[in-house]
Length: 142
Image (cartoon, rainbow, N blue to C red; front, side, top):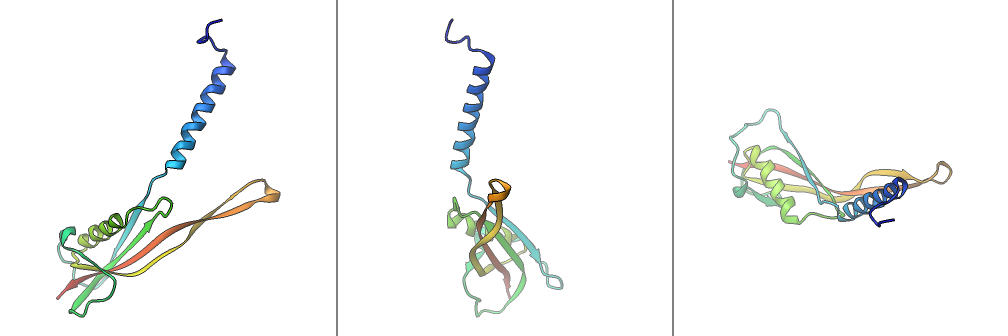
């Protein structure tokens, strides 16, 4: 019997094994993610969008007079973690949409963002999922 003449159950097992290997490799490879949500404040000016290249990321409130335009919330994966330059670029892009000159990071922590249960009902294992959370206040200089 030639090697390429495999029975249906044998071919099915080979396909399952190949599919499992591909799925495993993709899972191990993973993708770093950076998601953002932007909220404009009510009752403040809504200037035209600015260029992300001109938005400055700050870690403390500037002394220069400014007005607060809104907030940017960032959710980033930690395993694998995206480069910090990618996170800062996302902050700049979202702040520019609100017309900001700068964004002040007021919160930057790794925390539990979810959980999943696995195993049989009588011996469940609950594993937490962690992620990076950032909050920035978008400002416009006066």
